[in-house]
Structure formats: C-alpha cells, structure tokens
Length: 548
Image (cartoon, rainbow, N blue to C red; front, side, top):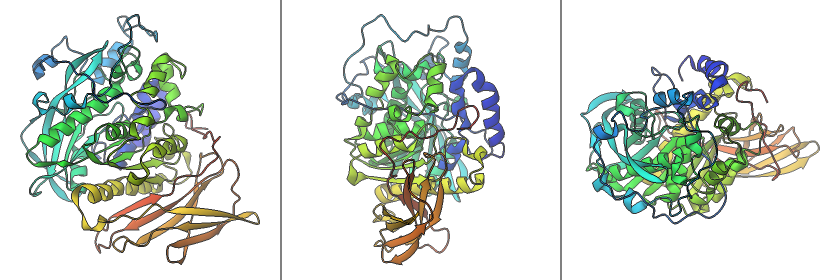
C-alpha cells in the first residue's frame, strides 16, 4: 500500500467528497491488497461498487444492434461520448448537464438483458494488442502489451459501440495455451499494468485487465463511453429507459467482451477462463459469472450484490452516492437496477465455481449483503473467506487493530484466494488438486462464557491446517475480536471464550491452510458462513468521518 494512503483518504473526505460524494469511491486504495490496483509507485485508484436484489432475471439473449463497429479514431472523435472520468468532472457542474429528474418521457425499452451470442462473436470484437514490454512482478518476468477491443454502452435505449482499453499480461516462459483471466477494476478505477502483471505472475495465467466505460488515467487505458461519474453519478442508475443504460451493465459487458478476446487469443485455452475483481470489479465478476458459462472460476473480492440489504443500514455508503445523484432508495432508477442488472437472482444458475472474499466491517458491502449473495450461489460451487476488521477504507483510522495487521490478513486472503482458486480450477496446480470443505462451528453456552467447537477438514494432506480462529462481534459488526482454537482431535478445534453470544452478535470461524512448500508456501483461508440474527442491521461507519 502506498505510504500516503491515509493522507489520500483524509483529503478525499475533507475536500472532494464535500462537493461530489461519488468521488469517495476513491478512498479505497485497499484494492492494492487484492492485486487489483496500481503498484506502489502509482497513485491508488478510485474504487467502486455494485448493486442488487429481487425478481427473476430476463432471458440472456439480448441486443447489440447490427451496425458495423466504427474504428477507434471514430470512437474517440471530439463528438464521441466523454472518454474519461476527467471529462465527466467538467460536466458535473455544467449548465448543459442533463436534468436531475428521475423520469423519462419515452416508453421503457423491454427485452433481454445480455445477448451472449453477440457478446461471444469475436468477428466484431476487434481484439488488438500492442508491442510487448517485459516487467518484473512478484518474483517473475511478465510480458505486458497494450490491448483494446470493442464493446457497447446504451444511450437512450440504443446500443452504441465503444472502445475498451487495457493491458494483456503473460508470464515469460509460459508455454503452450494457458488459462485466461479477466481482471476488473472498481468504480472510478482503471486497468493497471502492474496489477495485471502481478496477477499473471501469481496465477501463471494470461491476464486481460480492462477499463470500464469512460474510465482511464492514461491514453493506453482510457476507454470510450460515459463514465460512472457522469451526471453526478446518475449514470450508475440510468435504468428507466433501458436497464442497460447503467454503467454497471457496461462494465459487465466489457468484461464478457474481454473473455471473447481471451478465448480467441492463440496462446489462451478458451475452455479455461476465469475472472476476478475488487469492489465494483467484484460485482462485475459475480454478475458475469452468473451470466456467462465460459467462466470456470471466479474470485470476487470485497464486493457483493444484495444492495437492498446493505442499505437497510442508514450509514451504508450507497446512500451518499444516491444523494449526490439526486436520488434515494425509493427512486425508480435505483429499484430497477436492483431488479435487473445486479439482482442476486443473476448468480443462482452460475455454472462456474465462485469464491467470495469480504471484509467483516465493509461500509459498502456488509456481512448481511455478503451472506445474501453467497446464499444465492449454487452450494456445490462456492466458498468464502472473511477478513476480520477489513473494510473499504476506514480500517486504517479506527484503531481497532494496527493497519499493518489488518492489511496483512486481507492480503493473504485476497491473493491466496486467487492463487488457490485458479490453481484448482484453471491451471491444475497439484497442491490444489483437492480443496478442503468449509469449516463449521457449534456454540455451547457455559456459565457466562461460550464453548466454541469447530470442525475443520484435515483430510487434504497437501494442505495442512495452519491456524483456526473464532471471530465475534458484540456491537453489530462494527468491530471484531478473535481467539485461536486449539486442536482437540482429528478435525476438531475448540476453546472456551469468555463472552456470551447476545442478539447483536456476529460470529464465524476461519481456518487458514498452507501448502507444504518449504520456501514461500501458498496460504489461504476458508471461513464458515457468518451467523447473526435475521433482523440484524449492521453498524456502519459514516462516509465523511469514519465514526459510527
């Protein structure tokens, strides 16, 4: 993490956020821990979001039109859609900006949401790669190229071609056709070649990191289209005329178009594709995995669906985004977003395998939303890993634990999840040929204390258990404490904890595993689903002050 991360957070809270609440997505330089943000010598990117819940999804055979795709020069012409968040910032306070009403006169567009036949058509994707340059990341040489391809965004119900830009990274010496992985950034972020190279080195895959519509920090990673911040952030909720008008639809579609480029690349095995991302990149990962069965494995980091559940908490940070856009949780644009693009129903038929890693005190994605999303995934294809006291930015200011301790824990879980999950399902790493099942726990009251008993899968000889901890919160998930459980017998770990589990409690157990490598063993964790009252509304720290 950059040494100025805390100063950056403070500056956003005291300055930019005071005028444009959407900019506070930038206070999450934590994407660094997930390998989804810039390397240490680059300013941390703005982070992101997702959204969520309700009725059955529409059929997945929707509708890019039949027009031919213009070339990159035409897409980037002066009269094209704003090419970056920087351009949109000027628009926010312009007298010519679109009106803030959450209404449209034209009838809404109806029909399917994602046209997988069009999305998978490589003929119109125009996948292009630049000259190779070699960089060194995570102990490996990696070849990186600029990349671009064609996707779409919806403007007033009409699909318009846009150019998506980013980076293709592949470890030097990786022979034959490798697995391919899409790397998605968070809201306000952009593709980063250091993050792409790090993930490629970590997983021994070919990685395509892309910038979603309108985002970018450099000519090489700036994509066409309207950014998430367009019109004070209303672009995220632009769903009334057409749910595809939401920036999140554009982000997900760009990811799946990236899969098409990977599948058609001569050095990639199209039957071994995966996706990962942090925050809004995690949301895109979940929606894409539930929509596109080409995704064999997905690692969703610090991002969930079920935002209707998240916003039951009055301090949930989505409220600030809605307020900045002139909306609230009763606005039709928000409601339709929940019902379509980011509904948890989109993941119920997920064909691939999904691992969700989340911080226990996340201000955007609290454990209630995490569990609602996890429960919608097919049981045989899911695992979770929880990171105690980790969140979207406030953890470095709360004093609950040292910042270094929280970051080290999150780093192990995020990078370990990517290494292990993709090693198991994409690259055939022998250490991960079989994975442990998720731990379970039993709580027994004992005279003002609690006997915690955990069952942990010790049957995978290649992955011995390194540590088992019981985590609990007595203040509605605002803060967590933990205690190590002692091994009592095969698969059984237990301890008497001097606390009573009350109605505001949130509890889970976390088992940390390691490979048997003598040098730099791989480490990861698997957690039990958190247990809490069905009526729980988590305490969430305020966006401006990080106070409850």
